[in-house]
Amino acid sequence: MERRHFLMSSAALASSAMQGLSSPNDTIRVACVGIRGQGRSHIGAYSKMPNVEIAALCDVDDNVMRQRLADLDKMGKKKPAVYSDLRKLLEDKSIDAISIATPNHQHTLQTIWSLQAGKHVYCEKPCAHNMFEAKQIVAAARKYDKQLVQHGTNSRSGVAIREAMQHMRDGLIGDVYMARGLCFKFRDTIGRKPVEPVPAGVNYDLWLGPAPKRDFTQNRFHYNWHWFWDYGNGDMGNQGIHEMDIARWGLGVTYPTKVSAIGGHFMFDDDQETPNTLSASYEFNVGGKKKMLTFEVRHWMVNHEGGIGDTGNFGAGNTVGNLFYGSKGWLAIDGYNIYKSYLGKKMEPGPTRNEAGNNWQNFIDALRSGKRADLNAEIEEGAVSTTLVHLANISYRLGRTINFDAATYSVPGDKEANAMFTRNYREGFVVPKKV
Image 1 (cartoon, rainbow, N blue to C red):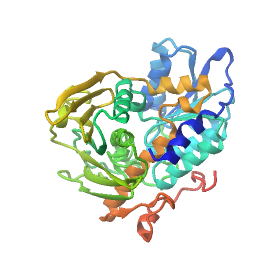
Image 2: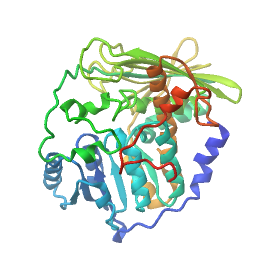
Image 3: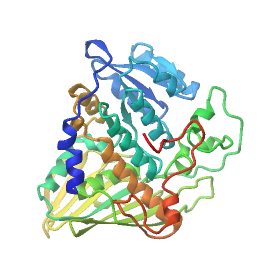
Image 4: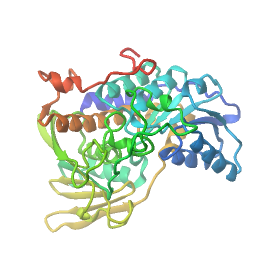
């Protein structure tokens, strides 16, 4: 890590004090927001924890809400309060933490609203829909520094992955000069869906939030929103942000100086806007020494490079993980919980481990300790990794290499690139320039 960033992200953060929990008897009251897909995982995680109460659920789809309430009833859990509008939920002063799993375009604004209401936040990846938001979400976390903000890059709490990072810091594979992120997932066409009336029980205006008003189609709604620029960031911003974060972490870098991405939407003629195949290269300058990161998204046939995917962590046909290359060997990370290392010219097997972790448990543990430094996936780390996703997408959409200047947080001399750092926000859903 660059020294300034490392100091800010470790010792300087340890002194932050947590706002006192609202709940009696050391029970932490959590509200889960956006509860269809990954939000269901949030509910599953918190429901298993002692002295943690799922006190409220929030979703714009009444049909999804009924399903989650039925799930909690089967678990024998107390019925939570229900909301469709997060802003109304935030008026409840007894809620300690907000756990956000809404679409990408909602993450930053909902996090800022929650911090302003005095809540701690667990924010799903990627924490920001664009470069401007990645900056603002960190600014808000620092302004409201009595609250803690965890990013949903789960591998940061993986026992094996953390051990692999320590090995690389200790020099196991020597000078780590290059990292690769692999996001090969067998994804079929989404086809074409016609404009239709908004389904009964769906508050589409709240779902759109900051995004421009569009006619409703099924492809722009549940899950497939990932493949539209209005709401998602393609698979690099969906699955790939996990591997991007691991790659940057292992390489020991923050912001790149140069980014170049090419790709396209191959094979299918459908509604998808984002590329389903993308290859991005990043150059970093660390104390005068160059390092390189490459990232590849592929949507169809794959090979299990470096043994990644052999274990079937992500299902047959998928290869999701990382490769690190050093002067003394190389190291492979398979998914979120396995690493293997190979040392010397003969590639002798080195340390290996298979053990997962729990990022939600780490969040709750940090709330109890009151120390920001106890968060494994503190929001600033997530925000920096998220910018790498956005810079690659900007390069791809412009069709050229971009040169990023971290000091000015801009692409000097490139008005088109800088214009893509933010968006036009709908009234009532504006991410503030000053938090």
